[in-house]
Each structure stands twice: as C-alpha cells, then as structure tokens.
Image (tube, rainbow, N blue to C red; front, side, top):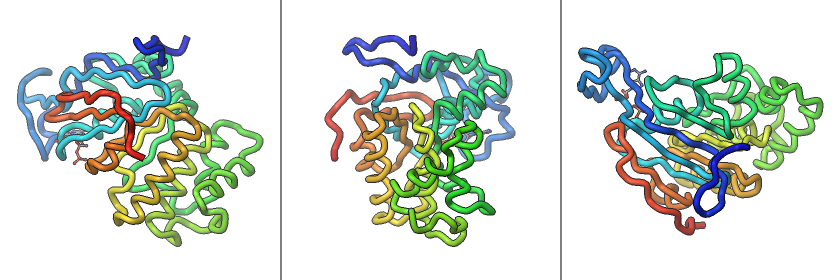
Length: 253
Ligand SMILES: Nc1ncnc2c1ncn2[C@@H]1O[C@H](COP(=O)(O)OP(=O)(O)OP(=O)(O)O)[C@@H](O)[C@H]1O
C-alpha cells in the first residue's frame, strides 16, 4: 500500500512527522536561533514540523525569508537528512534508505524545480531533459524528451544551450525535465523568483496545467500570495515552525 487513507478517502503521498533540523551555530549567518536543542550553540532551523499531502494535492508553502521553507523542501527531497523525525513518501520511509537508494527513489518519484533553473550549461535543452530519462534507462528517451519540450512550447529550441535561452525559456526546460518522468511528487522552490511577473505567470500557468494533467502532487514554495492561492492548501511557516495549515479550498484558476 502506498500510504494511509485521509478521512475523505484520498491517499496520503507525503507524510512528515515531528521533523527537526539542527545545525552547528557557526554555519548560520542569517537568522540565528540559539535554543540549545542539539547542544550548546546549535541552531534549530525546523522545529517539530508535521504535515500530510494527499496524492494530486497542490500545497503552497509560504512564510517570511529565513523561516525554513527551503530547508523543509530539502528534507522532503531527501537532499538533507532531518536531525529527528520521519518522512514517508509514497509508502517509503526516507530514513530507511542509504544514499544510493535514496537517489534512485528521488529520481523515480520526484521532480524538482529551483528558482535558479539548475540546468547543465554545457548541454542543450534536449540533452538536459534527456538526463533523468537516461538515468532511468528509458529506451524511448529521445521521443519522450522531445514531447516534453513540445508540451512547454520549446519544440523549436531543442538544440539550444541554456545560455542561449531567456530565463523563462530556461525555466520551461526545467519544467520539461521535472515532468518528463511523470513524477508523483513535484517540489518547486520559488520557480518564478528569477523571472519578471509576466514570464513568471506563463511559467506558473504551465506548471499548474502539467500538475493537473498528470495529477502530480505539488509542494510549491512561494512568496507570492496569488500563487499560493492557486494551490488547494497553504502551509505557513514561521521561525522554523508550521504556524498555520489553511484548509482545503477551491484553488483560484
Ligand atoms: N546548512 C545550513 N547551515 C546553517 N544554516 C542554514 C543551513 N540551511 C539553512 N540555514 C538557515 O536556516 C534558516 C532557514 O533557511 P531557509 O533557506 O530554509 O529559509 P527560507 O524560508 O527558504 O528563506 P527564503 O524565503 O529567504 O528563501 C536561515 O536562517 C538559513 O540561514
């Protein structure tokens, strides 16, 4: 079984329980919080965070700068390990996996979109989108990558390097790369943060349309209240804690 049932019959895809993230004090320069939770001078970035996200749900994560949103996303992606607590995604407990198994699980289950696009600069758009397909040993890789770039309106830019594309185009390549393996979970960290508002709106229309088309579970970090309002639910984080979990609502279109 993939996950527990929620009261309304939906399946839980992502579950986090009592997550703490603590780092040595000297590593933190921006928002030090010294509560000694993990020894003298340790900084606790996340405190006792729990959440559940249903399959197909879009969750917006909002909160002030430095409140811990990206740190939470890094834990959910398995790119960082929590100091305490449990994360279960699609029935798999991340803490049970070693690094190789975790990387494999991440490739099979998740797509990640970053504010800074994170494309490989020496590879063309097509080659960038091919990377996750090749790692998954997909024999139809080239066809799938072309179709994914077509779906984001970039069929005519397959052979261009990221440096030859605009910011919005680069983020569309990143979306194609994230969705090409049809991940069950898409993690997006301020995907429009480096784009002007008009380009950002186009990228987000595309992201939500792909999310709905594939029934992808979405966890979206955003500073933009209008984007958060397009999600089914909003989680407000402040000072490393979840301070509000605003209930399911009809998302704005
Ligand atoms: N590896 C680390 N070592 C030390 N401090 C860290 C580390 N990662 C994050 N922090 C600190 O944890 C706090 C939360 O950072 P995080 O990037 O999660 O916040 P955020 O809510 O995403 O902020 P923003 O909206 O500005 O991107 C910040 O004070 C940051 O400096």
